[in-house]
Figure 1 (cartoon, rainbow, N blue to C red):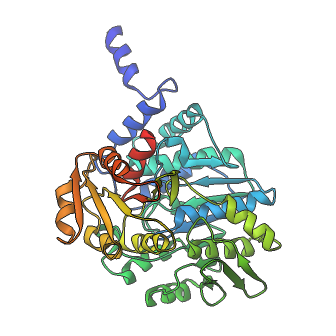
Figure 2 (tube, rainbow, N blue to C red):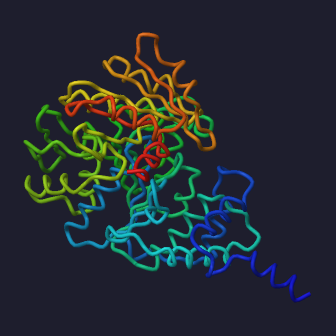
Figure 3 (cartoon, rainbow, N blue to C red):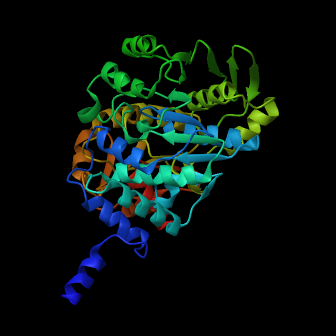
Amino acid sequence: MSNNTSTEDQNKPSLSWSLSTWLDYLQAIHSKSIDMGLARTQQVYERLNLDFSNSSVVTVAGTNGKGTTCRMIEMGLRMQQQTVAVYSSPHIIDYTERVRINGLMLSEQEHVNAFMQVEHARGAISLTYFEFATLAALVLIANQQPDFVVLEVGLGGRLDAVNIVDPNLAVITSIALDHQDWLGDTRELIATEKAGIMRPKVPVVVGEPVPPETLLIAVDKMQAQPSWQGKEFGFEDCDTSWCWYNQSVQFSDLSIPLIPMQNASTALQVLSLLGHLPRNQDEVNELIEKSSLPGRFEEISQQPKIIVDVAHNPQATELLAARIGRMKYTQLHLVVAMLEDKDIAGSFLPLESLKANWYVASLNVPRGAKSKQLKTVLTESQKVVEFEHVSDALLAATKNAGNDDLIIVFGSFFTVSEVLQAS
């Protein structure tokens, strides 16, 4: 009897479990990786009795640009001595990347402690990995009582676990086709899902320059207080510099940002509404210099220059192609691995007009596409070589590249993670 009890105890979640053991547990306790709906998460959240009344909450949704927009908001607030907590996903290398407190990650044990708190609160309620992780992140953030909380939506908006927290300001960075099985197969349907993070009478900053009609209708119906890109605020690309404006200020001759201009513009309007806009051009340029994120057009090597980017849908690769177009190089090498449920053909299209050598690799994760699937999408005029692993594809590209060549690795968070862990 005692031996059986001991075995059972060993299988029960414990503060002595490692973070990796907990993450395996989170993967196993729910039958689906995605299970849309807030009822279960809301119930556990209420049991946790977390208090965010002393913090201003900013919730950020969008097809692309969420992470970089969150980063620039975070850095802008920190530059003005505000305390800031950020929850974002997915992580690239280390799970603890998902929660930042004043720019720093917390210890694995702090995450374990938060997992245990959620485990006790949930009882018999089943949670997905993301729902459990989100609740644990909220526990960690509530413990810190920061001035500002920045929450990145994982999928959609209306039914995402992050949406259990009422924001003081909502942000929609962009609207494009992605996660169509869950969100709908048109921009109009996807916009409606993103709009679900809005609240009545609460400001919403819309970074999408061409919003679908359904978003305008949703804003009006919700009686939200909108700031539209191109109307209440906006930017102009001047090739070697850019300018930004809103209804009360304009900054000219700014440094080209490390993140997409559309997202930088959106973040500046958020900071303006929060009362923490940089005061002058020098401060904006300092903010631009500090606003970068791993895996987002990140340079990891020179001679040849190697850049990794998590771009994994047509809107993101269109931006990637535009950024490549600004660069000087002798020969372009594109290393790519993607998930099979992404729009592979649409994602490749913006890059196909670039004269490049393609290195397509299998992505060895669940839902990962095989190299053959990627190769069949490319036209016969493209120079394409297949590889079983991303690391092998990058090694081949590096061997073939001259010092003045450019290597771009893209296609998925998993793709970039594999490269960064190997470097």
